[in-house]
Length: 197
Image 1 (cartoon, rainbow, N blue to C red):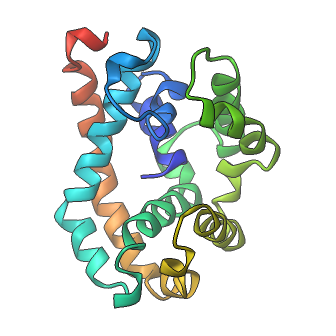
Image 2 (cartoon, rainbow, N blue to C red; image 1 turned 120 degrees about the vertical axis):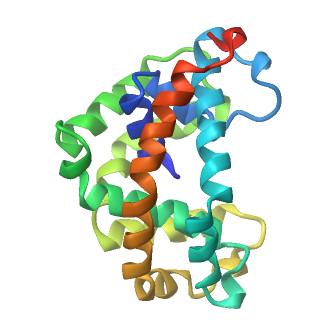
């Protein structure tokens, strides 16, 4: 799952939006981070672990061309955000536009975020990343942006075309898997280790 899904799952589980997003940038032991971020980082890691190992996502990965094998898990995360944005009204009672503003405010008002997230936050808001996921151009721009940030951008060669080709398979996998993830995120929240509360 990428930014939008992690923020939605944080809201769904009534945990900190900013802390859950921080999980993407929080390396090393959770104890290194301020107390108000620890539960969100822990929850983020549970979500990523299940997503990365679930049979539905593994099966979807296998449908990508061989040259995209290394990029496939990242592309699935980005494409899942696109599907969530596209069908947002089925998953949340607040509009995507209003939810995005709430998320941007939560990030801006949270202290102690990892430096990389702090430096990225103004762009996330100014370019309205969460709403941009909704259309194909926004998804393609995100894929291209991620490709530029990795050490071997060639692993993304042909990525946008492959994602478009697999649209139906991606949507089916998301719609099957995501409700399970929403339920798990609420269970994990109730079972957060006490040291992270």
